[in-house]
Amino acid sequence: MANILTFDTRMEAIAEKVKHGERLTIEDGLYLYETDDLLSVASLANEVNRQKNGDHVYFIENLYINPTNVCEATCSFCGFKRKPGEEGAYTMNDEQLLEYVQKRWNDNIREFHIVGGHNHEVPFDYYLNTVSTLKKHYPQVTVKAYTGAEIEFFSRIAGISMKEALQELIKAGLDTMPGGGAEILTERYRLKMSPDKASTDQWLEAHEIAHGLGLKTHATMLYGSIETKEERLIHMDRLRQLQDVTNGFMVFIPLAMQPRTQSMGLTRRTSAFDDMRTMAISRLMLDNFDHIKAYWINIGVQLTQMALTFGSDDIHGTLIEERISHAVGALTSAGITRKELVHLIKTANKVPVERDTFYNIIQKY
Image (tube, rainbow, N blue to C red):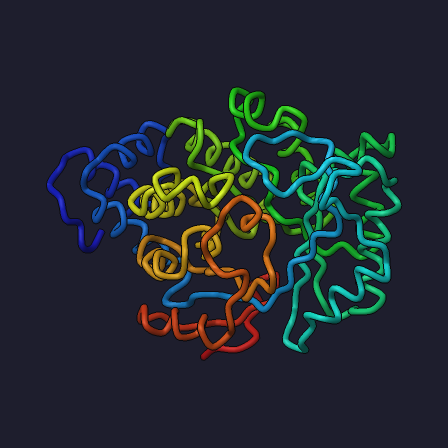
């Protein structure tokens, strides 16, 4: 492997595995988390990414929509949710939904990214109607809606299986699912941090069912709180095991935990070293994923640019008015322009590629 900067025998053994396309173990991943030689980890990840994607770096013009912030769950990391009747609680009706989109609309938007609270005050039909209303008025836009955890929630409130819930959503116009709700896919973590949401197995099952119904979906990992490095790697391993079976995941998105409020200060955030190392290790562990996304909302535009040499080939999108990360103290802006994204990519000596949701190329810059 080119540009290996260490003579450490363990790193050399891992480099040989990567060079020959052998899958890294969780023990290999732990070594990559522990080694001081971060630049060699980056070099390996960068080479793997080049083999998969060349110098292409992808982005999309998208609009976030959060139809409701009312939620039954009590996730310790969330600042977005409200209880029914609480100040600031809202649930958009059709008119409000369309008004929200119209105020932010431009003709370059290719994707609606829809995530909201687990609102048990409204029926499953509400969630179906959100999708069908958007599809009716914007048929050309991809609807990326509802996490695996939301699918499990829908099955409970509607008294139907997750497969039946997904089939109804697809009939309404669902095109793909976002990767949220995964957090960390171990039960120790979920029992402490998100006890009211789908279990590890349920989240994975929701995506497996979606893949079986023909949907390509996304996968995330929310890191930087109580999880161990081993749990992060177990999370990646469970995703790649499912990917071996279905090949239904398009991209993996490591998400840095945001503090509950901005006043918590920077010491409560993940470090730049941890962010870059996790990006690179994600690229190396997830050998059967085509794309690794650097989410600039979480790590900022400068670290996102750095991530392009640490294994990432996607910087997400324009994100018109992102709310959820900002509700818990993200310090970045809520949106970024196409011009800024193109500049960020070009000044990293990469090729900016505007894509659709499914990584079809719209335009190279």
